[in-house]
Amino acid sequence: MTLLRLCLVLVAAGAMIGWRLLSPGAASADVERQVAGPQASTQMASPLQNGGERQVAAEAEDAEPEEPEPDLAVRSFDEIYADLVQVFLTSQVRGSSGQPFDPAGSNAQASALFKEIAEAGHAAGQGALTKLDAVPSPWSGERALAEALTCQLLLDFDLQQMSRASIRAEQMSALVSSLIERLPFSAQYAGLVQTLLEDQPYMGPEHEGPLMDLAPTAYGDLSYMAEPIRVLLVTLWEQLGEERATDVETLLRYLNDPSGGVLGLAAQQALLKDPRYRDLVVACLIQAGDEAAMNEMATFAAKELEVEGAIAVTKALRGAALYSYFGGAYGALSERAPGELLGSYEESLAANLDPKHREQAIASLAWNIEDPALKFEVAAKAFRDDPEPRVRGVAIMALSRSAKPEVFRESFQLALKDPAFRRSYLSGALSNYASRNDAESVAGMVEALLKDPSLSDKDRKELEALR
Image 1 (cartoon, one colour):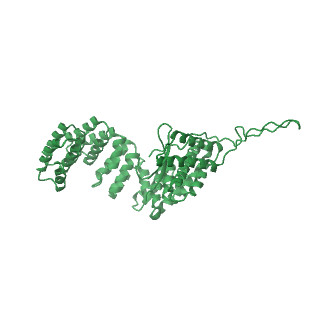
Image 2 (cartoon, helix red, strand yellow):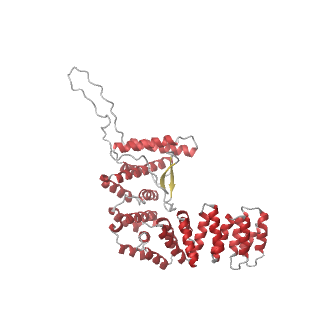
């Protein structure tokens, strides 16, 4: 079941506040947290400050009493909440209907309302939970989505304020506990809780037990809790370090228990982040032989570990996998650290080791590098210097998109003369090349490849379409 998440998108310089629903598995992976409101002071104003006191004349009985100053009454949380919902509801309706909309004005309205909540001293988080519990599930339709967004932003705002004010630690702990208790409520609620707490410093030791208690129930109709619980446990264990109640021995038992479920995966990721146990986790994954799990853990490592460790884990797991293509992991590495990944490729090439790692490194680098000259240089070097046929195949596919026509034709002729060169790579390269060049320049290469008796029926059909 898809887990829905709500987040705030601030567009341009202090511009529009918008909303969208996200899935916590996607990237993931890859969503940035935005501060849901102004950076209000943690010191709350008294309801009677700023001229709220009445001045009463106490002089002679016959003296004219002074006019009292206006009573600047502090508005209730419900009143401010209603105004916030209206701001987001208006922006949503106008945005979906294409009506003219003033994003800066909407942002200013919302900021002023958040400031008003902070200055009034309202318990915004608990108030938002009460409101959110009353929104009918599933959260759909303009009104429900606007209310859910408002509640998420109020919760995020209050957690940030309490995190900066240590004197409110107990209140923050209670609010986090209330959020964790709501994980079973619905997939949308679970996704919202994950969004609020993931990679944030809000949880404490007292929250480990409740998460551990919920983990075994995350299956069947409640399977939507599995990903949020895993993410929150990894976040919490990383923050607590040796202070976690779950000791290393217990984590290792989860690691080796094939029925560990959510706790097993969380233990794997927590231990993988600790350099002392990283090699053990990799060895256990390889021994288990579950390539889907290996692929998932490589992607996690590529995104979450320091670059050197991320490359080492990904390379080891990719080398042990027989069939899986680790596109997510290598894509993340090529975007995050292209220079380091290229360096790792060159080290493996120099030692003539890790052919699977070399293949995927070149494929991802040739696809994700933005500099056309560097993209061509990487592909040309791999085609020229790497003895592994699959690496050279990936390289010529990259050259078909980046090389000048004369360079590609020369590379094609060299590959055609090599009986070890897979013809499917040449067929795919010609299809890429044809998409950006005139048919006449492709015709000769197509005819030459069609004469090859080792060409598969599938590749032959694709080539005939290029005639």
